[in-house]
Image (tube, rainbow, N blue to C red):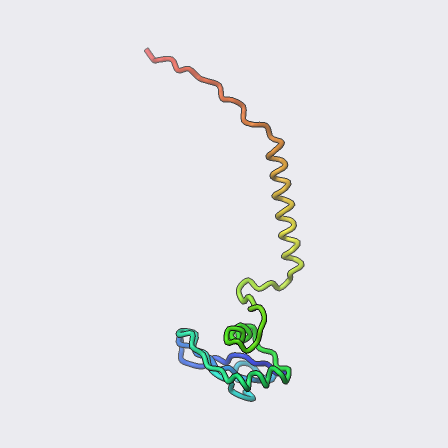
Length: 131
């Protein structure tokens, strides 16, 4: 399987990225890329892509990484919904179960608060002046 991903280049605390095509099993970040397809500077948010070559690799079955997928949608090369990178839902069934449990707990709390009678009126205490 071939992936299109970002490769970090640049100095310490000043990253920039290359857009590369690489086999999925290429050993780590230093794996030899098949082809360079562009660059990205995250500080200035500037990027340049070889659109024809990216379209070619996508037609050959290459899968873009999640970040690059969002970048390609922004550039207009592919259509679809952006992938949420923060708070990624790894197990949607568990999340749905938690939401349902919270809703049930909230409704039970509302029912119990409706059953509790209003507060009793406070007794009026008359103060006697000290002599």
